[in-house]
Length: 321
Image 1: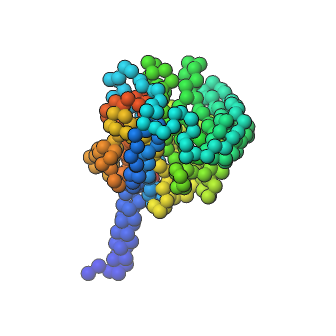
Image 2: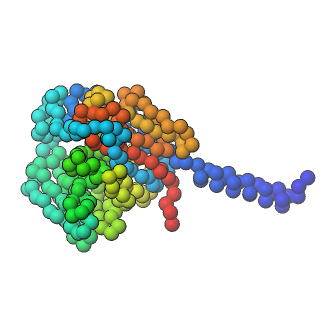
Image 3: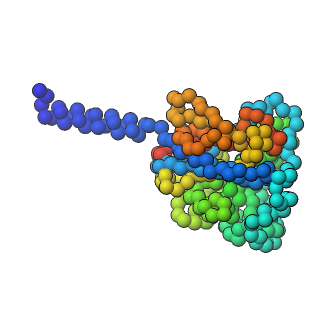
């Protein structure tokens, strides 16, 4: 029979071990497939909704498709053959009018950041933007270019008025400037006629490059641009407060008509870091749990052929001190 003091010590020791194990357990996100059918290759009919409890950090990457080295022709022209519009605004969108402008907000040896205001946009929001010491507002696009041998190559676009992001690696030389494919939302997602994230303000710190977002409904996020290369563009994201499973923290938006006519046609994921990778065609996906997930293509597409896969990984509930 152990003395009471020793028994209490064992109890505290065991509780500490269990708490440590629980803390060390990998954090997973739930991915829900809310895709609808379409015949239009220019319509975002794919919605892959990410939820999770207690997530504070993640990595988001644009990765070259696995088949990139096998293709010689990059099909980038729009295809409106199955659509009920011909390249103008979507017929269901409102059209708010603006004075067009283009403003270079930063241009140094490494980065060029440009703000664009379009003649019309589907939302009226005019979000204040600060880049370094410069403040402006009303941009529909913020473009980030990485300088390489004096040439500015676009790798990231953020749409302040609706919260959409598009990222891509630097292109292979034979593909010119390359193309974007899927887009994503990051932050507290609101579901209207289409999902959006309402951003209250944006601040971009050039060195090291990081994008600070403050959300209308409260909370904030920092997306550190940790790599822009020929292999990937990577964002390391930190949220100011943990996610709650009742509300999406991200949505992957894309297009799927057929396996060979899609910006995303399959999902690859692991349920834990030790688990085997699983893969399913997009139409077969319902709901899955993943510590990392890649939204991409194995079959070359006749739409945006060189467009990157988008991956979410490194979900974590802790923020380093």
